[in-house]
Image (tube, rainbow, N blue to C red; front, side, top):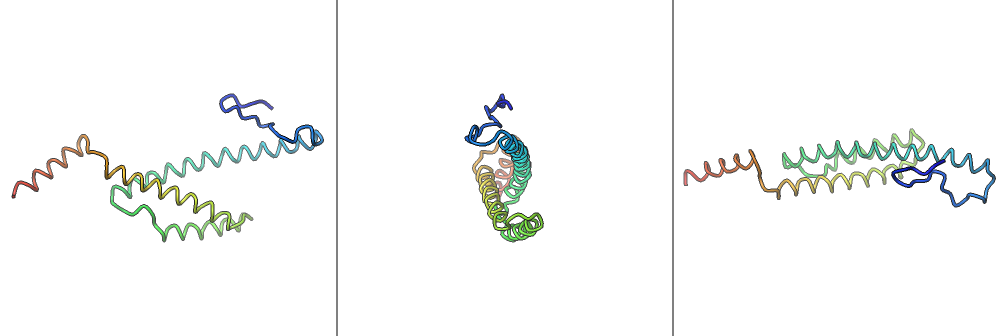
Length: 140
C-alpha cells in the first residue's frame, strides 16, 4: 500500500504493525480499506446534501422564510430513526447525526439570510430599488 499523493494519507498506517500476525494485519487493512471507501462516499454525499440545502437556504432568504422548520425536522428525525432500525443502526446515533446536520444547515441558512439582508444592492437590483424609492417618494 502506498501513501496518497495529495493528502499524504497512508492507508496502511497502523500502530499495530509488528504487534499482530501478518495475516491478521492484512485482513485488518483490507477491512479498513472498505471503511476508507465508505468514508469517502459519505463526504461526497454530505457535500451533495449541503449543495441542495444551500439552494433551500437561498429560497428561504429570498422569500423571508425562517431558517429552521421544526415540523420538517421532527418528521425527518422520525423517518431516519425508522431507516436506522431497518438498517440495524442505532436509531439514537442516527438521530444525533441528523441533529448535527440540521444544526449546520440552519446555521448556513441564517448566514445566507444575513448576507442577503446586509449585502449592498448591485446591478439590476440596485436600479429597481432606486426606481421603487423614487416612485414612493414622488407623491410626498
